Amino acid sequence: MKIIPVLFFVLISCLSCSKNDKPEHVKQADKILEVTSKELEKKYNLSLSVVGGSMMKEIKILSLGFSSQETLDMNQARELIMSCAKIFLNNINTSTEIRPYLYNFPATEKNIEIEIYFQIHGVAVKAPKIAVVDLSHGKVVYNNKYERLEEIHRESYEEAMKIVQEEKKED
View 1 (cartoon, one colour):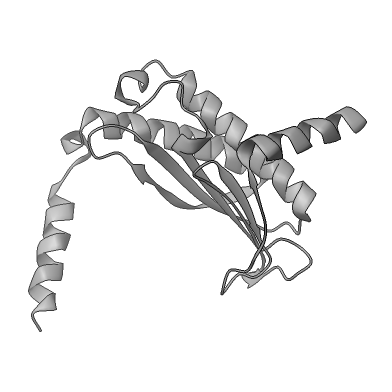
View 2 (cartoon, helix red, strand yellow):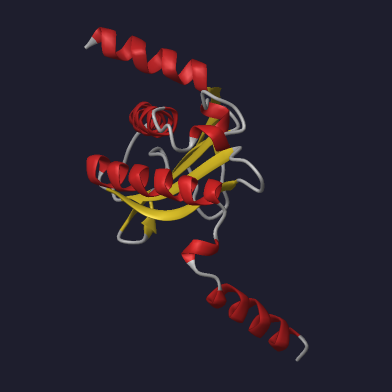
């Protein structure tokens, strides 16, 4: 029963905060997250599911999570997440409004997180297709199980970018 007053306090605290109560760096982060998520949703037919980041006093990390109705192999998932990362980083680095609040400029792959879950009508995609691809801490991780993630491959952002660029040369 002690938890109900705590939950009530948290709810009232959240409801009493307006958008104007947010610090400026959070407002700027929200703008980038909104613009980027809408762009990625439209361009790649993704559905936004998670927005966040690490921005207590300055913006260290911005995070986006999506779901997709596609069934992709590892090469296709790599190309998708690297394209999303390129757009995300471009949106951050070309915004003069957010620049003063960034932990480091220009932002790099270590300052963004993107996660894409692949599911058809709410059912996770099964191996050999990719169930989840994740870019975090400068690493791209591919999983072929959704409920209990099972990593099948991990590579650095640079390695993934090199593979994507080489594949484009072959086309």
